[in-house]
Image 1: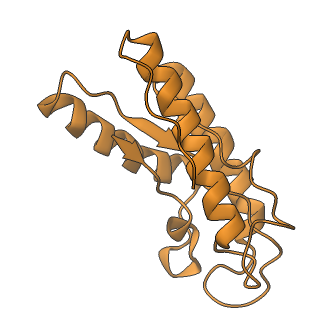
Image 2 (image 1 turned 60 degrees about the vertical axis):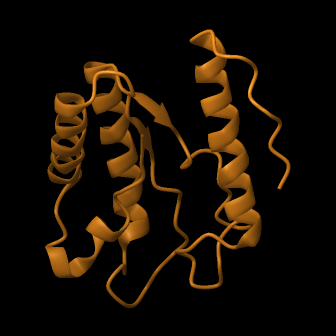
Length: 136
């Protein structure tokens, strides 16, 4: 189960909450998943980086997103949760739309490849047959 949350939580309309509050929400989701499901393990995707956003609800969020990613990593280590770090793999200069927030076509393809590679690795380690190759 892939969980990709956090960027919208950084909106100014929500306070914005700090990284610990956002990760507490992720923890509630993971706890619920684990409560009802003992087979599938959740995988958390970090938010990708953002460019410099100077207006709108995400103004200044580019500074907070790195703190959120750090907190995701702390949580993942302490709770033994698998994490896919998009923050370090997505290039804010190449992979984002002009709004400096959303992934463009290149960024979406890159994200798909990163997730597929990671999930294929997990399946292989668990003894599943080699998954089909992903070719966008």
